[in-house]
View 1 (cartoon, helix red, strand yellow):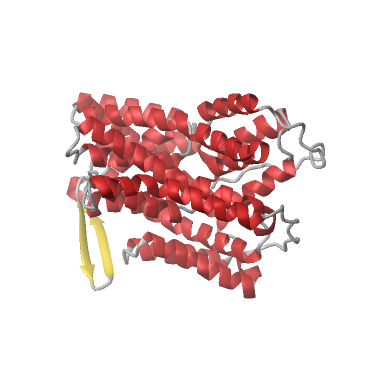
View 2: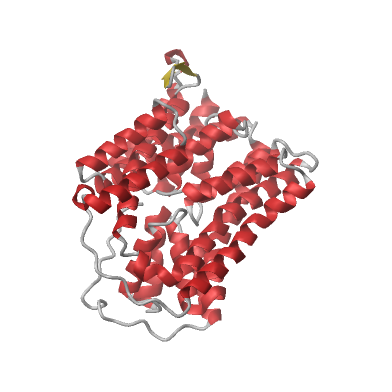
Length: 450
């Protein structure tokens, strides 16, 4: 969701893409991208732009930007979906599948290995000390994301009102996250029809011509990827039953995949709340640990869901061993998180020129993006409470839910590390990787020295 400077340069504005690369060349380049895709969606999109548009000319600049705008309209990680679309554009279904998988697999393997190590070493003192620093760094990273997105997205009064309403709905009234996202989208679509100026929507030009038999391609894609998406859930229902933790994992993250607008930050608080309070999969603060691991690895940040799935199954393993159950939980989570991404791209690719110019869709996206600012503000408050304080009180007064910290439980080490993190992030402007490394080292020193 970070702002990118990918405006069309005069030299590339009318430059066509070169000849279609061979399939082995596509595999080689997307393997390289998969291992180098650090830095969240902004860094990943810029990396693909340099590799595929500027250096190799496989995709024309205007087509790349148009597809990127379209991917912003879809739920899920936009960078991975853009990679899938580029692969589809160059080599059809096999190209899209290869590019999309290679974008995810390196990071997924690393996150899986780190999740295994985390679960096995979670009770060691030095690990807890190290992740004390990671949590403090994550708090600064989330605040950075909040300010960056707010500065870009909240350019009208209506958008600011949507952000405030989303924050109040989540923090004060505990409304379901899907309701916030879908409700904001509907409001944006209605406003776009009547007063697009309230959302600062720019006039659009008519979409391009449709390819041959677009409905056949769309229906086939929906059926094929719908079956692929549902296949592991059907197997779990038939063998383990709907009361098993793997069913709960698959059902929850399938639902999350449909409403994941705005990137990983937008759903973290909702995911953490459900994982900690709803299902009891995680302990308070562990979501920040997972995000810290995801920030240090290539691939989409939404791979933090794999960390949650691993721990959930690892801690309720029957009839498997904890390690096997954790691996199954992580793989299932990744499957139901990314299978929908392929469904959206393959089903909607023939319509990209038309849908990318739809005012009502752009209005829905603008409203959702504004609401995401409020969602991330809620995440920031949630992280701050659980990182800085060991105990957080909560009370309900009708529909109103109030949360407050127990001041006596303030962790001075976390406070000191958070101050360091904010100084390095906002003052020295360190990168995320350097910030995490420095704070982790600081947590290790403080944790073992005190």
